[in-house]
Image (cartoon, rainbow, N blue to C red; front, side, top):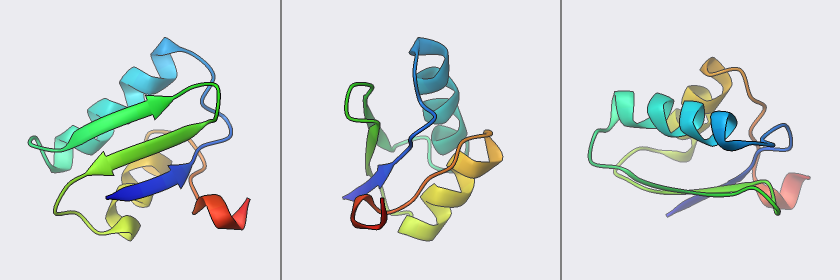
Length: 68
């Protein structure tokens, strides 16, 4: 499982955009967004880097929670 901090994620539109971006590269991915904690968890064959890049391509900063 990949867990990333997405500080700019603040609403349902944000979570939908992030989920759409990840599912565009892995339609079978399970994406869970916690708005309060600004955390995205992804169960997928994708690497953390691929997930981060997809989130960044959607317009959001993403980093490992330990790096925040």
